[in-house]
Image (cartoon, rainbow, N blue to C red; front, side, top):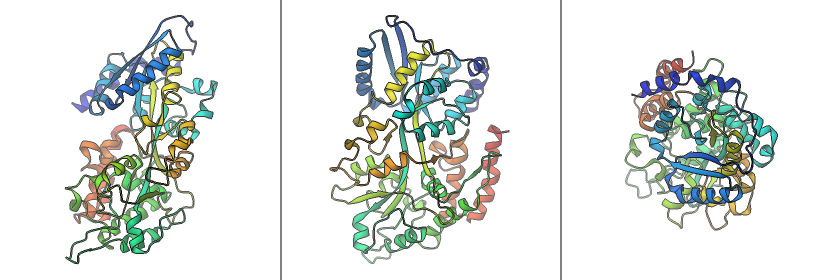
Length: 440
């Protein structure tokens, strides 16, 4: 079924190639001409907030009517692909960084360069985020406007560090510092022969692995050939991580934590450190005991680079290439990605791409943990990259396919089922088989 949908997705839209070569001019309609824009999003929890945004926007633009359709995340891409095949895409719709390259290649999103170049977008939105969505489109053009950024961070238990007499992680931390701390933080508290607190926790998840690879200046893929070809810096990161389990015994195997939600291992104090997406700030606030002192730090810079790259990606909005109202759709897109939003519309840890929100005093709430929210601001203004490609969820192992792909291979290593070298050999064959279907 998935292959059929993918084939239809391509075949039905060859006719849209015209939009890639000659898109509509951004000529606005008359101020009193009625305009109706369809807006699709994927978060049902935002229904009331979206209606507030619409009410404010329509009050400022009496001739514009916004119809919002909200679809659950699991159904969103299936339903919007059906609309794409029917040539009925909404004017404005939520776009994922993991999907943008596919949609750009199939001419299903409007190029936004002329809009961005003609107004103050570069001043009001983080240029690094604009570049990030341009990068994942695999073009030199803009096809989406970001509204939120997710980075990855090192979460750490300050209480555990205090008890162990360890200084907190900082920007000068090396991998040796991290590894030594992980060993000291691995504790059998009741001397029953079982570890009660591991120093660190990870498995083959993309955020758990690529964060360290990019912090070491490495890459899993050869971007020139679009093939799986981990470089020396990536291999160094993979060896360091897997040794935490296999040699140091300061991190558990994946199978030893399979009965616990992965995002709960750290807030339930089963591990003193953990790396994952910044959105887990919200989860930690909800799951951890309120008395627990915890913080965030940047991923320690690896030994092979002096210029680590932040692993991060953006949620964005795109515009249909055949919208009847390109200028009006852009005006609304810019509003709903920026000034139309407020911080309470963001899950804690997601970073607004609209600078005025992120740089406001309210972003650093002194009554909430962690106290290091400034780190997210620094990351938002820094160079960033992802591993997203066409076919990413399949070769990387994500969602329903998490036990497969590269995720499954790393899990196999730390579960003792194969060596790292064996996993890489298997990965070269299986991952490149997937990539070769998308990149000839």
